[in-house]
Length: 358
Image 1 (cartoon, rainbow, N blue to C red):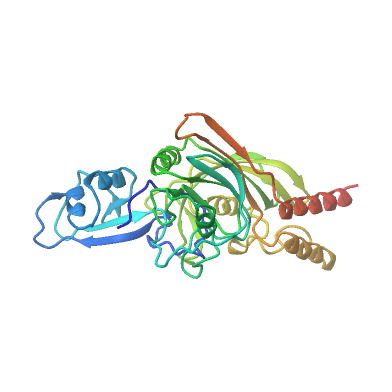
Image 2: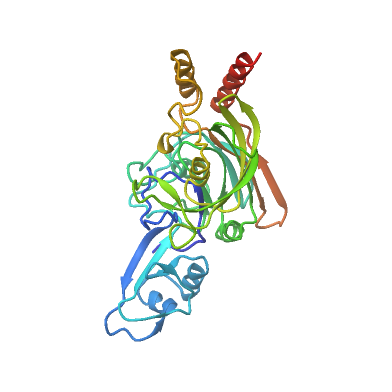
């Protein structure tokens, strides 16, 4: 069976490429489900699962519970939870089950750093992270399988190693890969405890006011459109989410902003920025692929269409990643400069703003 790992954090994961089987936008995927019999006697959930999962130790199940990967009736439980009659027990993980073989593919990837424990990659826009529904190859995981093809210690199908967090297909930027189970456990705890450093650059419609602020609002799957996430009032709907933003530069009708994640929820930056009235530029899923600011003259529309062609995706880049090295304890920080498509977009808007305000 699959082994367990702490939750991977999924601030901008693309639900179009892999469906979230949990249905709540948590970014976790069901691997196993058991329904306790009507005559079930009270039994610790770790013992309950060990009896039903092949090749799984009680220690592994307890680690899974500590990582929030064991749910009973839809809610995370600790390993000492006692299963009752008709309880629904789920084992969830940070990626879908791979239903087919992972084929190593020679897909170019930009490796920023690598040692015996970790690898940091600057993912290009357009590259799906994990194989899943409709994307069974051509993903970052396939590229990693190629990169590690001569490393007998790295098994691309083993969830105890691999990607620790994710960004979506059309977001560019930094990701960390754990090359050992210990590294993934250590890094996973850092993401869980919110001690990593993650900064994004985005181009958004309009100029946020105030120019710096804190956005807080629960994020969960939209009740109207399953492919979207939405902000809900505090309560039972969605999961707690906080984004800090700062305007770095404004260009007439759009702004370059820095976003710092305090939490990591699906599409968090995209949803939070739309929530305050400033969708990401060319974000088709959240309405940013329309003219949202400025007088829509024919000339202006042509300019916007040209900008959409220059950067044919949501203008979002995971620029900075910081974490403590799982073996040495050294603090490590990595920066990936804004890629060419977003840079060209920013320059085009900078020129437009200058010409509009001589």
